[in-house]
Length: 297
Image (cartoon, rainbow, N blue to C red; front, top):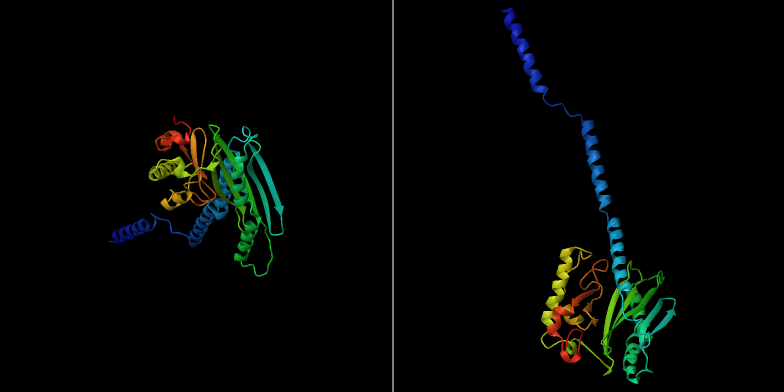
């Protein structure tokens, strides 16, 4: 009997050991330490994807976007007898104007005065520019009237020549607004017939009823750029309303028709592109033959 009791006690002891031994009891201090490590890991992840990191990437892509615009080749050297680059600079307390613009040599043809007058009236109207800048200042609601920043307007241009009778000019306007971190870009395109001394617009260059096809072609190119992922993140397709507003904003060279869009029309200011290049071969059938555009016999 004694032996039986001792055996039962021994078996009970073995059973208790089996219930408690499979898992080690967690020390509250260890749990707290693990939680702190996880919290720190989360913080480190937030640092990697922080707003500061995003801004650095945006500054880099914006710089690339601007460099592509500024470094694009044009025909200024070939046209230096026809086109004179004129400069205007004005430094005031509230703003700086720094303009470089094209001026056609009227000694070659007095009819070029039409083009020069257009430039003067639309881009060198300093009173209009000054009033606009002052209005922008008022919108800042600076009750202390402290001008911490000066607005800056910069104008430069690219020019192309097609078959010696058409010049295409894109004027790009860089605006530094008070209180804004980044500058913005606006574009105006001018197509001028040197022989007839008149301006050419979308409806003069394209066949009637071409708008929808050109619009769809531009969006197909934008969509392809977005899909490729190369500097097109956060971009979007062109709206029909914006196409109608910017359809005259194009320049022509030997192989391409380039449509230019202001910041935030198809891409934010920090990525994407300012222009969509449409190969002549894609829309050759839409071009009016009497304008004798490139590639059309």
